[in-house]
Length: 633
Image (tube, rainbow, N blue to C red):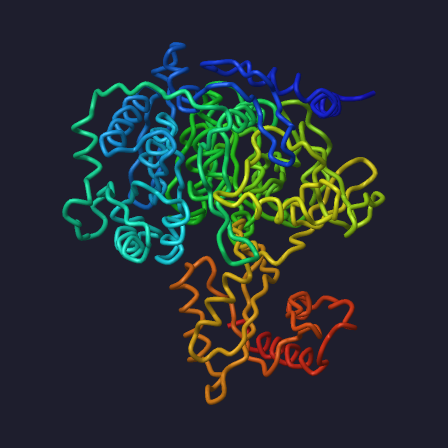
């Protein structure tokens, strides 16, 4: 007998227009759509064409108008500062209106881009929602990125206004966000005329006359303002989110309004099993796609209470997350396998001393969840641990158990089956579907469901080439991951097929790292690979050929690692740098990164028939042996 899970997913594929229209009708539209899905310009699919809506209206105004204004919308917990705050839907609406008026006063209008460089504070959500209110696409940048990375995004997005903070804080160490922003603004070719600064009293900072405005002063002047939500086309960009790719140049994923809003809203009851009034705790950062989808927009669209958390999983102690869950009676939690691997180091007493009786499910995503970690989390936390899979590009889950529809049996290591709207298959290099149990490339047959990205900012051609041109004339969406599917339709995602390094769920292009290393004055050649890391999923290891006259010593190694940290950010800093006389290359001159990765992980390196010089493999083996002997530095 077919269960509800199968019925839901089959219906969504068999009658997608009917399915997505049914979900969209639960939300507010200023003008109803003419067509559910416009397929006229593949692969540029457009949902709810002709429809006019506004995400901020649906996430905030709608609930206040329905009488839920006194319900708590946001809980801010900051173990870093010792502060906590609750914000009702009505209070959130007041703040969003005020900041929308601030943006408008400074000339921001529909279509203008606003860059947000803020930590995990409620003001970040206020800024995001205010942008959505007036139709100004926002670009939130992770507060851990460096000056050059921030400058690249300022230029690529062509932003009109920047919002930043004096600082962030991590394990009580202040981070000089304003200083980084100032240097990035100087470096950027796009000269931004207005910067709104949230002064948290964490850092001393320099105020640039005429350009820098204080958040508190701006908000005070506009307190009580009422700014009408701007109806925008369903395909109007809600935000840009930059993700790294193998070319080294960050890609600006463009998210639409109507389709994404609809997908997020229905994912809360169907996938995450929530209901209005639930407390939802996603531990992600606003700078990543999970922070956009499941800290800010989806919980508010569903009328939930969302927790904004400033801190780490183990500070001030390893029980802090579970203290938050107990304190606020969290119903559903969303975190990452990396965090669970970190917490595994500690005794289960830290977690089990807290009352988690309100917690129904814990979802994990960001990188593959290994079976030992899944079993540990299930036993330590005594709650269902649901692995699920999605990407920055998808914006919401592609594979998941769906307790809101039907809880399927667990298979450790598998994020279960394709969710509604996703037609996922495993293919070979030619795009032909492979039998069950065969390793291949994970792809999606078109059209993609509502909520996925529209294109790459300012680069439609790169969008097509990166995601749709891997299989000659076959129109298949390329996820970039290897996977296996069993006879029952369960998937196992095996990791990246391209050259992107996934560090704790954050994607970095190998070329982006290599270009920085190659810019070091001592470096002649460089290659970077992501190797298995017990804590982060993957870590960067660099292999370097030095210029003549430079010594392969610890000073050079530390200097190269510091350069990557400075140019990209701490997230990209190599775990180790090894010096070799030559890199393994094909006869055409392409570095064989799979050989580097395979040797590092003690795996088979595969076919070497195209290798230019066998001595290069021995060089790498010797370097890796030295790395192991030194404890991985």
